[in-house]
Length: 449
Image 1 (cartoon, helix red, strand yellow):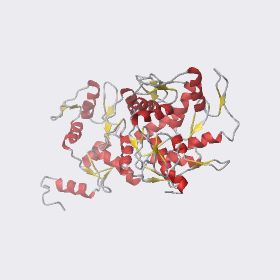
Image 2 (cartoon, helix red, strand yellow):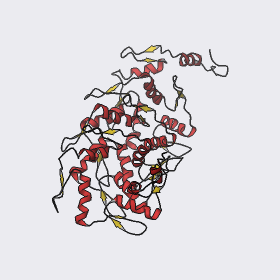
Image 3 (cartoon, one colour):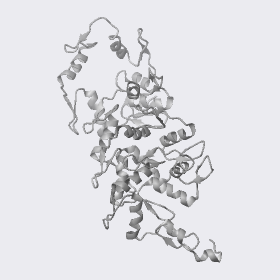
């Protein structure tokens, strides 16, 4: 039965060895039915049911079936750790814990999954892993009935119902339900970005963000929308996208009740009520409600444009701007007006267009002239006429501008960049309006490309 090199010469060993190989457990408890490989293991177990000799801890009064168990347990109270790792010096209260610890140095993983062959250093980790194959989820939420494979996952889930947030940020006081979420939040204050892309060197605060970023290089988008066939690199993004089709808005603002498709949308919206702007620019001192907005703003000062168009080479500070620019090359206009049928390349352009059909102008210049606007952005730009504020400065010549777009156009004077071209003669221009004014020779001669 045994392999040739297996030593089964010890007394009683062949019987025990074969049971380990075949897995029968012939000894069962007459009280609870639990089964054991060995008779002495059953005898030890029976002491848990026996009302006979019991040994109790003098500190916490916990009961144990064996005197040795009490002696080992006392180390919890005394802090004694007599077992020392010869490699790293770590100390342990029990020899069995040291044995398990040594596997972190040796790399030994004696427990293998029979389905996918993944190996584990601890038997318990293998048992937990097996639930990924069996689908077993023994822990259920008493509030919503959702089930979990691990007790820890259920424990974390319960915070959703209880609203308990026991972990507090020592810097800004923000509270979190989970320690891991607080840990990730702290990188906002420390600026730490421990995860680095091996291809382009970009650094990230979270491993998940790095994994998601990798798709920028590979171009892989394995998650497809069943409705419009749009592809996504992350499953989470597909889930959020599907709410565009279903209209689902599961998250609501606790102040005004307005509903949103994602938690992030609620968080962004909440600043409307709080007015809190905890992130300030180190260059111009302008304040922002969100760290991401500050990060995007910084490109105004640095001039950094890490995203480039693969077709025309035009560079952009933001990935979203590049994405919108690509529609120019595709000729795609996915956003159409429900009233007049006009089509637009961007959702924002459609939104601005819709105001031409409506008389509503909810934003007014209350402080100065009372003029009304359909869009808040238009009011914000208008207010600089009164204040004279010019917060956008050229990093080369120092000239200041009231609007970021004006600064952007001005920069072409220094860079010599001409991103706009005539579609007939290919002559390039710094501004779109120059293309419109351009009188092309090819036009009069009927030349077309």
